[in-house]
Amino acid sequence: MASSIDPAPARSSAHSEQLGGQARRDLADAPLLAAARGATPSRLPVWFMRQAGRSLPEYRSLRQGVSMLNACFDPALLTEITLQPVRRHGVDAAILFSDIVVPLRAAGVEVEIASGVGPVVSTPVRAAGDVEALPELHAEQVAPVADGVRMLVSELGEVPLIGFAGAPFTLASYLIEGGPSKNHERTKALMHAEPELWHRLMSKLAAMAVTFLRAQLAAGADAVQLFDSWAGALSERDYREFVLPHSTAVLDGIADAGVPRIHFGVGTGELLPAMRQAGADVVGVDWRVPLDEAARRMSRDAAGPPAVQGNLDPALLLASWEVLDRQVRRIADEGRAAAGHVFNLGHGVLPETDADVLTRIVDLVHELRP
Ligand code: CP3
Image (tube, rainbow, N blue to C red; front, top):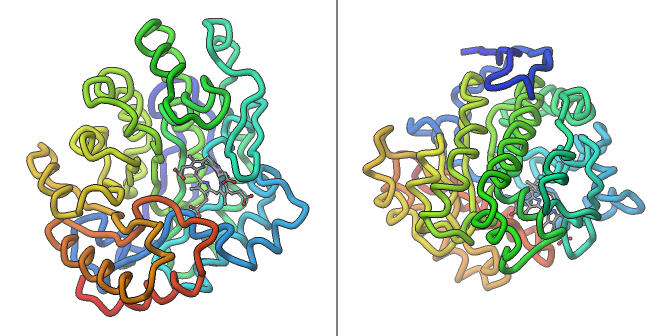
């Protein structure tokens, strides 16, 4: 079933650019896409968050002398980096090499990625004027990313490409705090003290995410993941009031593409049903809640139970193979309780991980019954 995304804007004039859509590849039988639909895949699909990155020596050598963000705007380089883990591990999906702050940088926000730290914003967004000054993203500003996506889908064969964006809350936290934050205190304070301003900021970030995702989809991405890495810092009540409407707007804004939408966060055991309600087909689960329990928590969803992804603790990649073998089999067993299962980590690959361990996990997952 070949479908193409309508270039018309889904929600507002903020993303009214004409995106030259191209026909999506017909990969209906790809294990990742089958599992995401709740069909039985030919094998249990596996990929790893942050599979492209510092665990790979070939990545480290390509990145010599190139800043993270410059790499993200170089179509040939981002294509090569995205392909590296697919070639090496035989994973069932490629994830676009990019970063959640790429749309901010593309729109003109001064943001850098400091090695070992993460995104750093030179002028944090804290007052009404800062929110008003936040630029809109136009699709042509992420043209190098779309060019990379087009190169990737022509090189990936039968392997689906997952595009992604940062969810409004996680982006808002970086913008308001000015960098990574343990407690998200300024973010939570602004949310509660100035709810109107908060919602204005979140609406702008949602529009940006839709533009960024639609550019990737128009260029041929086969699935998308919305990363709300820090949503687990919130109570369910605050999540529903301050975040859910905006993440829903992002996922609704790409629904017409008809591709699986994966929604992921860390520490979100209490938020899983709400994250499902935002419109996800697949809900990402960290290592704190087993997949069968995650499936149970979402079983009463009006749209039916979703597929799940995740749960292997990335720290355990540094343990012995005996430990990992047991964990991988446990997760595969527990995943069968869900409507679909995509094998993954509970969060990204840590840089100190031995890449050969990832390959060995892929081989084991592929031997297990889906
Ligand atoms: O392989 C993949 O998963 C695709 C690439 C990817 C990167 N960042 C590459 C990257 C993805 C999907 C992201 C998303 C991202 N970026 C998130 C959401 C996922 C998550 O981890 O929770 C977040 C919160 C960010 C922000 C960010 N960017 C952080 C916290 C860091 C790490 C800083 C560090 O050096 O430890 C980055 C930088 C970054 N993004 C790297 C990579 C490979 C490391 C930079 C480098 O190699 O120099």
